Figure (cartoon, helix red, strand yellow):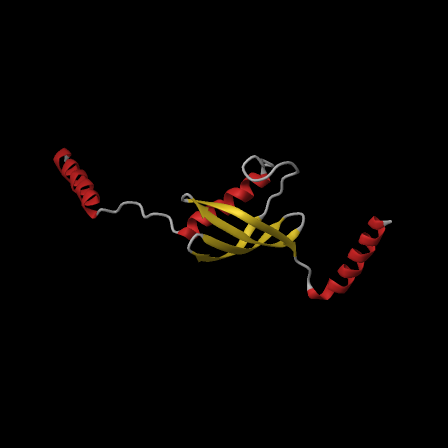
Length: 133
């Protein structure tokens, strides 16, 4: 029995070594997704040292994410969900510098359903005029 287990284990190890199944390198999309996931994670902890200074944190859960990559520039667009604020749309640009992707430009937008956009515009105008006084 001991011989059988030993030879089986040896066979499995030899097959694993001969298969040459080295871990595949991460694709640009995977590396970029790791960048944005890390960005959101740091923001949820209010750890802005790696990305930007000051303020309060937030927690957004990505729902869908799209990348457009050309050489060392990648644009992204994603829909996010936040427990308190609901759905948001994020977009931006990342650039590849010395083998590392970095966020170069970032936008976070509030999504307003068509059915309430007129009321939202009116409220925004009222709030803006109150702040100007």
